[in-house]
Length: 513
Image 1 (cartoon, rainbow, N blue to C red):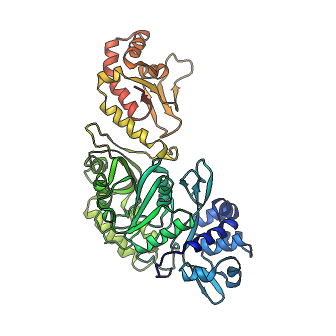
Image 2: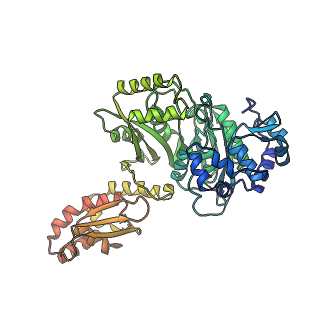
C-alpha cells in the first residue's frame, strides 16, 4: 500500500461500494462463485482451484482475482469496471506494464440492518438473523510462504479470532463503545451496530487508515479514529462497552509486528488491559477481550488469570478454549510471519523455546475474558475451561452467565431455600441405566442450548428439576420431595443448597425471585 495516509475520499468509497455490490462482490456472491472445493483449497494456501473458478472477463471473477486472490488483471479490463486512477492515487491499486494489481485485501462482510454486524466471507458462518447489507473490511494482503516476511506495521485482516470476538460481544444498544487496537477495523464495524458513538484506537497509523476505509466502504459513519497505545488516546473518558483483540502473542522479542506483539513482557499486555478497564467503563459497562496467558510450572493458570479480574473488584468470566505446548505455539507464530524454511527459522525457534524454559512455561492458553464494571461485595468471577462446541453468538446469553454466578454467590443457604427457582428452558433430563433396572445408574441434566453443559445429579435434584417452575420456594418443594422419597426433610434441606448453588452458577436453574 502507498505510504500516503491521506483521508480516503468518501465519494470514492461510495462509488467503489456501489461497484462491488452491483457485481455481487458480497459474502454470498463470493461463496457461490468460489464453491466449496476452491474455498477449502484456499484454506490450504492453494490458489489454482480459485483461479479456475474466477477465470474469464466477467466482473465478479475479475474483482475476486484482484482483491481476494491478489492476481493482476489486464489494465483495460480493470478500467472498464473500476475508477483505476482514483484508486491508485488513494493507494489501493498499482498500475504498470498493462496490468493492475491490488495493494490491499478487500473482504466482503455483512452489516445487519438492525445495526449489528455479522461475520464475513470465508468465516464459515453467514450470520444469525436479521436483514443484512453489504460491508467490507480492508487490510494488507496476506504474505504467502516464500514471498518474504510481513512488514513491521503489517495490518492483518479479519480471521478466526475476529469472528470469535465478534460473537462474544454483548448486545446493545449503548451510547459509547471503544475498539482498543482496532487493526483493520472489523470490531469497530461490529460496535457501530451497537453504539451511537464508537472510538477506534491503534498504535499503528496504517491500521487506522485501513480501518477508516473499512468503515467508509461499509457505509458506517459513527466511528472516529485515534492513534496511541492502550488507553492513552482515551485518557479520562468512559465507555459502556470496550472490545479488544490485543497484540497478545507471547514472545521473547520486543514488538516485531505491531498487529500481534506488544512491548510488555509475557502476558502482561492482557493483564494491563483488564487492570485499567474499570477506570474507563461506565457503571455496568463491559470489557471483552481475547487473550493468551501463560501456564507456568507450579502455578494454576486459573489463579493467574483469575487474579487479573478479581483485582478489579468487578464480576467477570474467563474461558480457556485451547492450550498449546511451547513448541506448537512457536511453530504457529513462525508460520504466521512466514519464517518457516528461512535461515533464521532454527535460531528464532531455539531462542523462543529458551525464553519459555527460563520462565518455566509449560503451555500457552487461549480464550476470552469478559468483565462487567459492577464493583460490589458480591462480585463474582468464574474461571473455567470449555473445549466443546457452544451455541453462537455467545454475547446473546453472556450476561446471564455472569448474573447466574453472582446470584449463586450472594445467596446464603437460608436465602436459597426461600428463593423461587425455575429450571432453565433449554434443559432436558437423561437417565442412563440397564434396561429393566429399578433405578438409573446416572441422571444427567443437559443444556440443549447456550454452553451445552452436562451435570450429573442425584434423585433429589432431578425431582426438583421436574417440579420447580418458580411458583413455590425451594424449601417447601424439598420437604415434599423428601416425604415422597422417604428421606429426612432436615437432612435434604441441609445438603441440597450447595449442589443447587452450583447448578444455578452453571445455568441449569434460574432464580426468579
